[in-house]
Length: 98
Image (cartoon, rainbow, N blue to C red; front, side, top):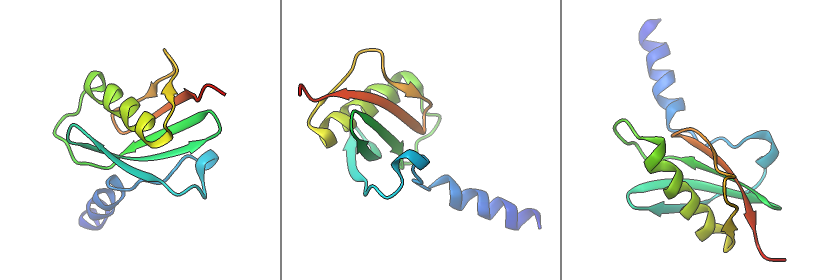
């Protein structure tokens, strides 16, 4: 049973399931400096789920990459001080100038 749980945990670790708010939105897969993200945009909100495996990723390195991925996917700028989350899941607000 322990092996089954471990295997299930490994399979789920590579998942890019969106927050319920972003359900039904097809992600854009963007790679920035070796980190790959599934990015979803809804209005002025965005999420970036890191799907690449990295050894001990640091938020200080992941947040700028996730913000860049969101800007590439949306064509908009990430609002200052709006990036929140952790090394696997990042949310931000975007400004498309409109």
